Length: 422
Picture (cartoon, helix red, strand yellow):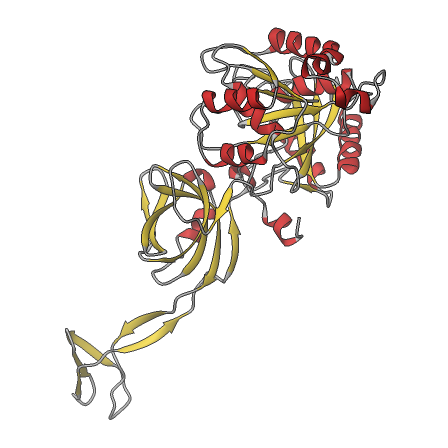
């Protein structure tokens, strides 16, 4: 049985992963190896903090036979998981931060929901009617609070195929751990960053210890990586060396860092979608108030606006160097008719030339510019009407460029993973 949960937290507190961890550890003998943390469309207006839903997969209860369970009708099948279902509903009801913006949903499903729902939840908004109809069709049971919008993410998370994945180990202490100084957090995050299997732990240039949440939640820290066993050992070592409080440690299987939200070479570019667009820069980037940079490029005959916003920090210095004629692949979300860049590949750089007065053809000395197409030698008076052009060395090389860790989205694949073929 799959248990999907979403929309239980707010900026005031709680974290949906904490609830999944409680369920996972309470019923560890029945649960599969790892709970799931599934990030969905990062552009949805009513998303929770990280727009992540969770899933705990329950195997056949120890007291039941697998073949017998398969033959049970839905009613008896869910009754066999009665204790787990009751505990989950009570836990979510008691600990969720219900408000106008937070509307928890729980889905219990004996069947895997089709992957098409997961894909749709990455690229567009999903309606409640669409999800409820699907849950009815697959015989799922569900429980909703408020307007029940959490059912959308909970259902979509159950449909995650999990083929491309990373892991995140989370250390919890309810309701939240003690306050630590920024310097202390950067030191701890820096230690996590030393291990080959971890990624996106710290942004030293921008003083951002990325393993620590910004809000006060039961999550003390979360470390992302590719080796679940190593991640758990890293967490236990950090807790020991830095006397970090810990109620429980949980390793999640997750779609973070997979680029699952990116559609490459799309037939159409639509609002709230995220894309990889091959195009040619058609104007030099220009700054605006606030430190943002904008430019236009031609993509499949269509002019698209691109932006590198101030939070992307040093990434803007890369964007500033683009010139008309550069061939790039721009990665990002299409919001308000603009691609918000999160990564960029320079595929082919345009040649840039400077125009200057030519050398005298008679004496070889420099000529002076007297006006449009009028050049005169200052030594012998020879005239010429053609300027000289020379190539300019570009300060940007072909290759991949990404936003810093402080600006990275959960789903975006860092270059360290793409280079390693993760």
